[in-house]
Length: 551
Image (cartoon, rainbow, N blue to C red):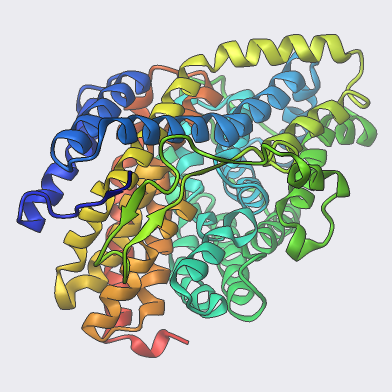
């Protein structure tokens, strides 16, 4: 028997939205005020959401529990699968001693922590976001920065902030593709608008990172390199998203930024080398490369293989390069599972949809084509390159990695369970409808809605799937270009990535800060708020006074 969603159970959309936000307030309070451990905040948040779904929104208890379990399983696979494999590859390079070579090779380019952050957190992280997405870049880059000697809290925090710039075009542009699919709008048009919003943020993110690390005075010492990174990334992002396609902006921007920084640092060095205050004094005269070119390439090989494989894994329709082995997924009878007790049993209703329609609940077990599998395979292939590190040691390391990540695994599963119960109960739609009731001010709140969606789900893709149709409908009602509000959902969503409990769990797992999720949340919260307010004002101006900026 089906159940139809109710979006205004209390008879007042503002009051209903306020009650729907209670699980979010709980997360904010426990992480931001009490600094609770992530798994504690997650279990309280998801429990409150289930109770509200049953008692206020009238969702049958069986459906509520099934939706929560569906979300938890999605958290475990494919999200946790990515995190575990990424940290495993890093742990192997550390255990084998190869990471010492990586540290020396990077220090020989620059021993300055500010510039290392630009290379790893910003540029390399953007490349990984463009190829894999879904938590992979933060997991890899945060672990690398800690290995280099970064303060763990700053390593986690700046990797989360750096991940802002590329998120809208992550995983070969999948957030834009999903936004176009759910709204039936032109994909390239959405890409062009996002490409006329995000570059304003992308150009200042490198400076934002450096100022966060060391303050304005020290940031000015590396301003030339910061400008090179920002201009290379933002300029390439604008050109690719507007004149090429939405699949490649992250990859092209990252490559141009890395090359630009490498070339620039051949002719320019900062007057002072900066390290964190609690580190040993920076060496004078620079760091000498202590290894041969072959040894350096061997040490970096696991990450080179990883980058190549996740690139090949990303999209078989667009790249035409995915290995035929991946088609095994489609031949498996369990490739797509109709989630028991949920699939087709929840009905969406007006005004979220034009006519009542079933809310599907499919669980996709695409084990061979998942990004985590590409990372796992890169680890196995690396065993042929890493000296004196066989399969037995690798599997023992894999087991230790899972044990290391027990609490983050639980937290991620609970946070995805929270997202799913809010979606299937209609609570997320209640929040969205409250924003759409703002009338002519809606363009200001449009990116904030995307920000909320990413906070809830940890994914710009999921936020676009959740709120894309609402953005289009609300814009049409007030006479604003719907392409703008749909694009703003994605552009605003990137600002919520750094405070999403799912993303924070990944960052704490990668940096050994499990249990310090509240500390990282407080670290990133004000950065997130400042960025989303900037995006909200920009979208409002583009809707009216700056309409000429739109394609």
